[in-house]
Length: 189
Image (tube, rainbow, N blue to C red; front, side):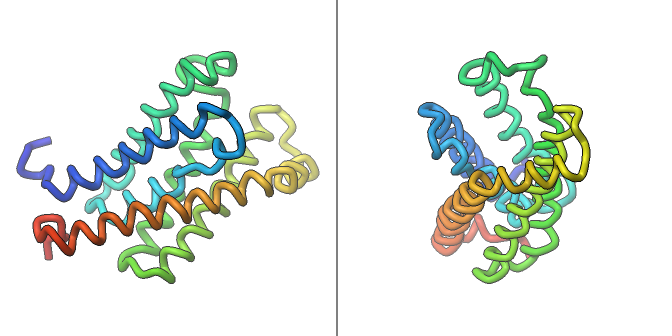
């Protein structure tokens, strides 16, 4: 990618995503409830809202997710690793890509109400897609088993919702303040 197309704006957006992905790694150190208070949804929404084009909104946040997953796969979750990552990883990445699509559609203009709606939508996408993946990985893809997975996942998804809301507020807030201070971070018109 030529330097001219990778602007200061893109560098700052990528830096914010990378820092939050690193925080995601730290949340797994105690493997307690904070492990599910994840910035995953916020990373997808933030990249979708602020990267332009059709590749960067998906590629850069997915790359940050992949690197953090790789680190987790070879450290904290080494016993669950299948190949490079964990079993059924593609369902998480599908959910992440769909969260990005939702972010692109819902956050063309970033407002608090749109961000709240996108946060709820991202959580619903994660909940529905990840649990289909869990059923498929366990080779128990029946409607009854899927409904049972959905119900048992509610506490985790509430943490996911909280993490997405918390990290979105931080990421979007920091970037909004930075854009007000530095004109080079504002989108090209």
